[in-house]
Amino acid sequence: MQEWWDVISTFEKILWYISIPFSVILVIQLILTFTGLGGGKQDDAIDESALQEKGLRNITVHDASYLKSWMAPAFHVFTMRNIIAFMTLFGWTGLIGIHAGLSRIATLGIAFGAGLVAMMILTFAYFLYKKKRSVK
Image 1: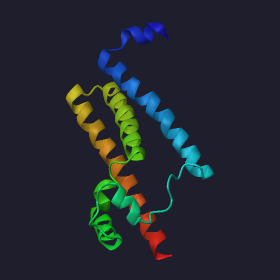
Image 2: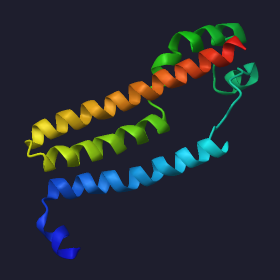
Image 3: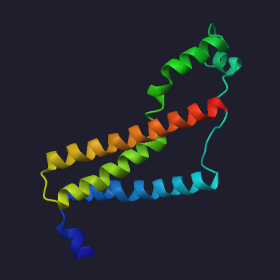
Image 4: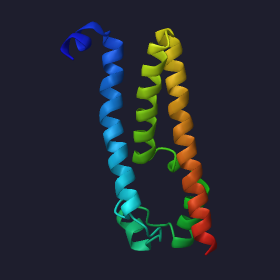
């Protein structure tokens, strides 16, 4: 094992350092989600007193609901779950690209694209989940 690690390039080592920890975190997230423990805050209600504590004194609950619905898609792209999925796919796709003989630039481009696709799929799935939940 040590001989293999000594032979690979620094670029590939960095991709391994990204792939392994983020994969472990992703698996833990999936297990917690499927067992019902990883949902986070389920209540999306807006509390006017919480808004006032944050210095937003003139915003009412109605205004905040409007702002939240208008800006929600942008905020749901950059969540911890999406960033973990991005880094996991970025790392593994990068390793696949290196082993396929692609250049570092091509590998980074394809890996970055794969990470973005993962983020967009999760964002879309969250959007559909919220839409389905609001219909009930």
